[in-house]
Image (cartoon, rainbow, N blue to C red; front, side, top):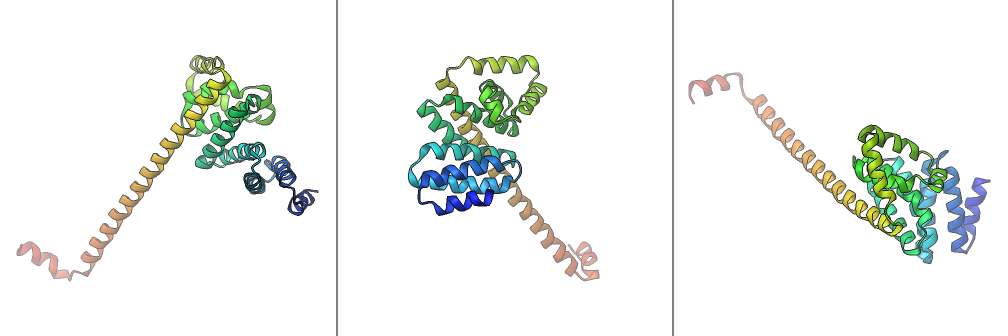
Length: 225
């Protein structure tokens, strides 16, 4: 059945039908075969982009973000969430956006941005988000453990009191801040690795030079500096 769906998507010359089939396949297989689901959503996203179908493009982006978060692909998750939230904000699809807020909150937790995650968690804790992203309850439990119940409730209320538009803009701002911080962290880590490699190279060079000294060389140098 699943292979038949993919064959149908490949055979049709209707980009909407092809992208929609791939969307259903990806959602159906995100738990059983997340790697395959990820690849299928990428195909569906590309078809939607080429055909100008922003609705299906945003659905694929949201699901790609969810899979990226579960695999620790921070940059991919942030970029896809930003696109999906922007589209749903522009179109007024705020109910759908609640699921994206839940995914974003989970991603922010991975980055240690707990207060921002807690602020968004109230929006993510909706019937729609609970149905589409049930694992989000584990994120809320973790936030309560880290922040404490009182602090968590205070931040969640701030998010809950925002208008839909304000909450969407807050989410977009947090994505930009998280992306900038993550990029800087990766750059610093790369610089540290380069510095460590240089130190190791210099150390090896010193060891090699020392190993080439004849037994009498060292004592001769101490006697005749």
